[in-house]
Amino acid sequence: MANTAKAEQDTTAAARLDVPVVVLSHRAPVQFRREQGKRLIRRGAGGLVTALVGLAGQLDDAVWVCAATTDEDSAAAAEHDGGAVPLVMTAEPTPADGNEADDAPVLGVRLVDVDPEQHEDFYQVVSNPLLWFIQHGLYGLATSPNIGRTERDAYEQGYVPVNEAFADAVAEEVEARGGRALVMLHDYHFYLVADRVRARCPEVVLSHFIHIPWPGPDAWLVLPADIREQILRGLLGNDVVAFHTERFARNFLLCCQELLGLPIDLDTKTVRVGGRVVAARTYPISIDVDALVEMATSDEVEELAAELQRELLPDGQQLLLRVDRTDPSKNIVRGFLAFELLLEQHPELVGTLRFLAFLQPSRLDVPEYSDYLGRIGAIVARVNARHARAGVAPIDLRLQEHYPTAVAAYTLCDAVMVNSLADGMNLVAKEAVTVSRHHAVLCLSESTGAHAELGAFAVTLNPFDIQQQADALYAALTMPARERADRQAAAANVVRGNDVAKWLDAQIADLRLLTGLWSEEPEGPRLAPAARD
Image (tube, rainbow, N blue to C red; front, side, top):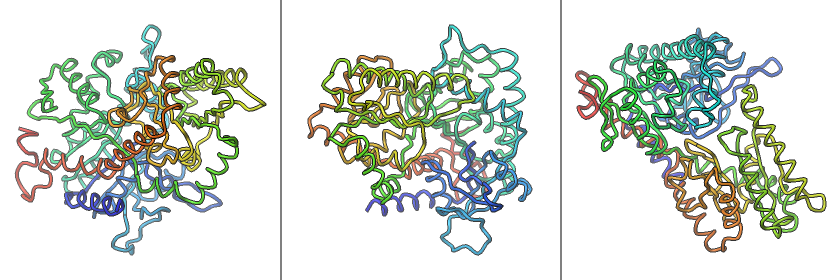
């Protein structure tokens, strides 16, 4: 039944598209690599790739513009003179040769190869950490950031020209299709792209989905006035700017009002810029439920779950789980401090509770990230030294990324901890409640996008209040069985009812309504009066 519903959603979305689609994200849907002299193509993971590749399978013409990040990516791009590489996007992608079956999902992948020094400034100085830290509220403003010549040069000589290069690639793909296409931009790397694409392709329809938090106007005062204005003006080149939560969408509109002096309407969630009306919309992203359930019941995951059971829970211990990147925004250190307090205040849990933490090291070339990883190691060592019993440490820290093992842990855990300082969404929360077999209690930060959907069924965490987090963990771990089951089932039903196919379909439905791109009339205005004068 679930598969049928998903197929119907995909078909509905595709039926509304009689124009080409151009997707832009920094991360590619595939990665080319060479092993033993042979080119291999690996398909990317994650909900965004799953959703958009699924859509591509329903379309006659779809291209994904992305960054070439490996030598083999660059080689593949060069073989096609910088144009798109056509691929059959099955589980193991292969080059398309024109003889594919009619139902084979073919996607053009255009890998943009930019100057390495420009990309370094674009990615390592401006996108990460500057924009990421601003949007996640990570700066301690008394001491950071210090925006000087280095940061200004990185913006002007890195972020701007790289955005221009990707805007040119997108515009070329649109122009090759007669100038009429739907362009779907993604994330914080490309805030300047839409305005440039619209200048070249006035009939294009543009949406930009921002997957990370969007803070209010005060947070953006950190940036020099000209830079923040360019970012906002760039985004206002879109027809729709999309977010995970109503709060983020409202913050964006308030930024347009307070920082640019533009008229906004909070009831219709629109901002007027010149003769155009730009909509801010909310679409909470989700997961591919069917794919996750299939993995959770696979032989590999079953074996991994049995192994975790033997290693961590031989005598029926409870399992607390977290799965994260070692990003300061994930608030991992405070999470371990709360766990330490839990054990100190409830010593009966020592020896009966294990904390499994799967942490993927992230952006270690950024000093703040490498320092944070060191702090994580220090607090884990302290907690384990104080509370080990019979040679068994309460925290099992695994600095690795192995998704099947994480899924196995989802099926076993009694509670899952997500105490982020700020998260656009947080898909770990959705994954865990979907495949839990022990009716895991979701302990969820109120500062995550996921809290808007799942907070009613979770134990809410204040990400700054360590005592409150410790109390919440205790409540979760001692919750009556019936309440646990009811909460987990309700959360899982929300996730199943709002899966990644519905996320994409809702965007397409709104774009059709707002812009009239799918009008059968070949001439005349492409945008409905409600969206543009």
